Length: 267
Image (tube, one colour):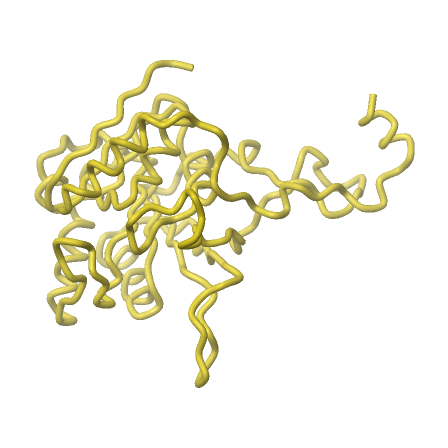
């Protein structure tokens, strides 16, 4: 594997993005604040509606500028702003929609009135019609053996099941919205290649940088909180012993597999 670089910087995302060269980034993975009032250490995620919309538009304008033609943007977002974000990306910024992914998790906040939330959304847009998509890198085992199926694995679809990094888990870091590594593995493996440059403008706990490092990509990330930048730098020095989560379908074996195929597989 080729040597890669991983740069973590303290600073406001919009200001840091504005300093980057145009058409220089292959993949942007963004997990911005959802404007829900969360405490991120040295700042509280709470703006009035117009201020939040302006903030979002401003950093996305810069993100589009620095993205290479054919490059992808994946953006996590909560339910309160996801529809506006889609319209902003497609109709104002004229990016190409490639997918609307639902991340389903089995545990979350409980409610007595209304349905308990069990998912977050991820929008995938590209700069131009074409976009890198490495399907063979992200296939999951088929559910059934069928001649018409590609038995090297199935497309994982746009509903992904990964557990949260639970607060009691050894991998849990002191950050309120830490994302599971296998979720980022799928995004980075699908939409970039070894040696590509992956940017995370809201570095947080450093999951994007860590997974990019393991997959042989270069990474660049910013965060307004210096403690999170230090957390990421520390994480990048740790030995790799496996990702902290998996898609449960990874462990399945095709049903109805002919005996001859089972023998061949065992040999």
